[in-house]
Length: 201
Image 1: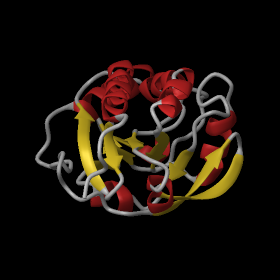
Image 2: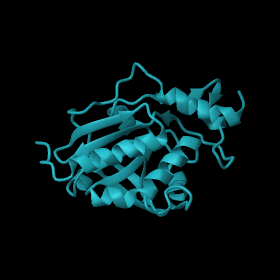
Image 3: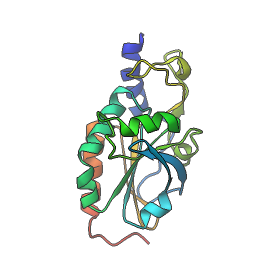
Image 4: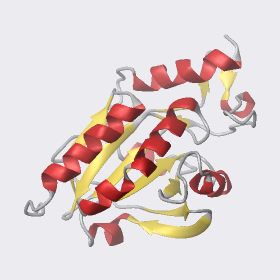
C-alpha cells in the first residue's frame, strides 16, 4: 500500500467499529483546556468557558492536512455562520502539534481563519472521551506518513467523532461513522434543534 492510498484507508479504519466506546448522549462531557489556534493565532481554549455561551461542537479528527480532515474543516468553515446563528461554538481537536494547527487554522482552503482547532498532543482529551487512538497503520508508523502537502505527520491519530456538548457539561449527541460532510451536516442539525432548548442540568 503506497502513501497515496494509505491516508484514505486510514480514514476508513478510524471510522470502523471498534472495542473502544466513545461517550454517548447523556454522559458527562470531560472538561478540558488546550492550546488552540484561530487564524494562525494561538490561544488557550477552555470548554467550560465556551459552554457559558451555549452549546459547543467538539469534533475530533485524525490529522490536519489529510484528505477527509481537509474536507471536514472546509465544510465547517463554510457553515460556521450557521453554527453561530444557532448559538454554538465549534472547535476541532486533533493530536497535531500547535505549530501544525497554526498553519491549518489560517489556511484559506481549510479552516480559513474561521474555525479554531486545538492540540491534544498527548491524546489525553481523546482518551477521556473514549476515542480510539492509533500510532501506525498498514505497517507505516505515523512518523513516516506524509500529509496532503507531502510533509511528515509524525503523531498518533484519533478517530473522527463529534460531540455536541450543552451547558451543564452534558453530551447531547455523539456523531461518528459517517463521512466528513455528513458529520458536519449532522452536527449543524443537532445544534439547530437545540436552539431555544432548556440547558441540561
